[in-house]
Image 1 (cartoon, helix red, strand yellow):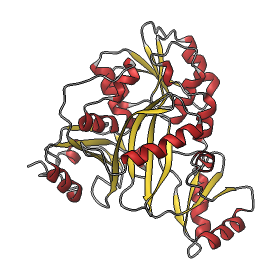
Image 2 (tube, rainbow, N blue to C red):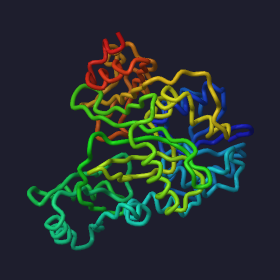
Image 3 (cartoon, rainbow, N blue to C red):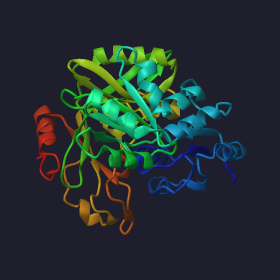
Image 4 (cartoon, helix red, strand yellow):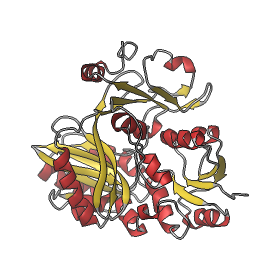
Length: 391
């Protein structure tokens, strides 16, 4: 494995297509270490090295023996944690290496809200498959009403379900346990959001937010697009209040320097930080933020600073493509779409197409940009009928 002047990426995910595209554009030679090959990384010229990243010792051994110029994380929480264990390597932006203890805490969701978000104390119940969880859960539901149950150590919404005492919550909860490696679930009272869920990416230096771009999620019930992320060119309402809330959580958590991806809801006028992941978001969110701001966070990741690019900020929508039935991919499936700025398809003809279960089953993204706010707003309402939205 000759790796002189190469970089090493930890992990692979089709949702990190922009990273692969960036590497190919800049003609950067790289290996990537992962449990499974990645179509985007292979097509960008990457060399696949098979290794289960949960096997920390083996993954670290691969990284240290490869003679790489730099080691970088693809973006998932477990990859970022591995990167923090390799902080003695020459990494291009060492100020964004987060102590491994923080990754251990943030990956374990049961500690997040109670330990760090002091202004929003939420009653939690932790249940274990080996404990008396049916009785504990029944008592919690009787006191709190509708609740959300989620694995403390899963990702991409795997195993997250809504339950109530008026339905068969036992069987629903058993399915959530199946998605948790540690067989441990977090149960919280349901918070009803006002409007849409807020999402975004940013980065922190010296516990201060240096850049933050917020947009919102919207879900649909039909076609290939169950979910979109929209980023208007202007700042959304409550951005300054959200920055204050995020800064409080960041300081309580002890984060000093990091990229982050965030999900937030507002309920009864109160800001609730659902999650801060100490990494950039996947599913082409970097592209959407670039088109809406003119700033590409991947430049910080690879070059250590945010480049100023001559670009007129536009309203941007990132539609995520999924399949309900699965099967085999055929490019004719996406021939209906037109007028887009970018179509990022991670599959080629005859590739296996997995049925939609959660956001990690995205097989591509459609990025649309609008100079006109009304067209942007109309596109949000039209949703999956994309053929004429730019005309």
